[in-house]
Structures are given as structure tokens and as C-alpha cells.
Amino acid sequence: MPRLQSRKLSPWAMKWMLNLFPPLLFQRIKILEFSADFQYCRVRVKRSIWTRNLHGTTFGGTIYSAADSPLPMLYWQIFAQRGLQVESWLQAGRIRYEKPAATELILEFRLSDEQVAWATGELETNGRFRQSLDVQAVDQSGAVCAQITMEAYVRLPRDKRGAPAA
Image (cartoon, rainbow, N blue to C red; front, top):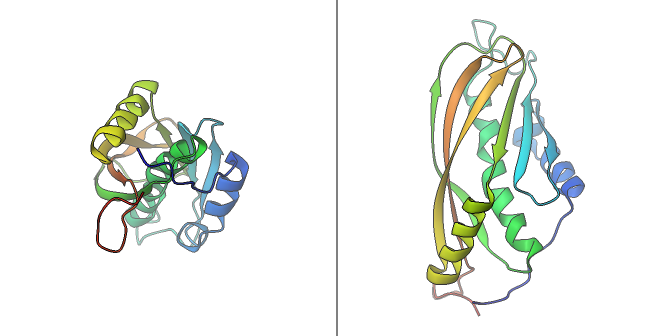
């Protein structure tokens, strides 16, 4: 398997970088925590005048935006910490709104050791993988306001002709 280097970030640096990312910053979405192994991320969606819809609850698009970045970023850094460069992005997502979000929300992203081992095997064997993760947007009372399924696509880098880079 190619061993291209990727930029390793500390959990603090990754959190800082994403918290300044304009699509998150302007929607009052804050990354609260990345675990040291990048298998966990906690995100807060804060209520504000900028994130309220006509009913006074949080825009659905804001909730979806909070779920957009963490999963591909977790995989990017899991492999970067191992010295392997990958390209990762969110390929698909589905959201089901369960109830209006009248308070701030918390989203938690957890990748198990088994999920990471499977992803590593797929990357070594096929040079790419897709993996889904179910996430819940939970309000301050513990009620689930949205169920979100995110699908990350991760692959080894390609050269200009589209072949895997060495």
C-alpha cells in the first residue's frame, strides 16, 4: 500500500481549524471535542438568531451542516496519524427530523475499533471504502430531534490520470 504522508493534526488543532471554518462558524456550530485517537467527536449546535427558522426552532439545514464535516475528518486524521495520506469526503447523507429543536443540540460521532479495522482492511485491499455512521442530534432534555446517517468515502490519492498515486 502506498505510504504518502498526510498532515497530522492534534485534536486541539483539528478542533480549532474546524471551529474557524466559515460554514460552521457562522451557523454557531462548534466542535467541542476530538478524542486523541480521532475515533470520537462531539459537536454542539447553539441556538441563535442566525439559526432560527420561522417557528423559532433550529433550521434543519443547520443541523445537517453540523453532521457534514466530522466523519470524513475523523477518517482523514485516523489515517494521517498512521502516516497514510487519504482523500476523504462525505458522499451521502440522510436526515430524518423527529421533533423541532428548541434548545441547543449535541451530536456525537463514534467509530468503533471494529469499524476502523474494517476500513483499514478495505483501504489496503481495494484502495478505497465507503462507510456509514448513524448520528443523533439530541437536545438538552435528551430527546432526539434528528436522526442522521452519514456515508463517508475514503480513498488513496489519485494521480492526474486517475490511477492510485504511489
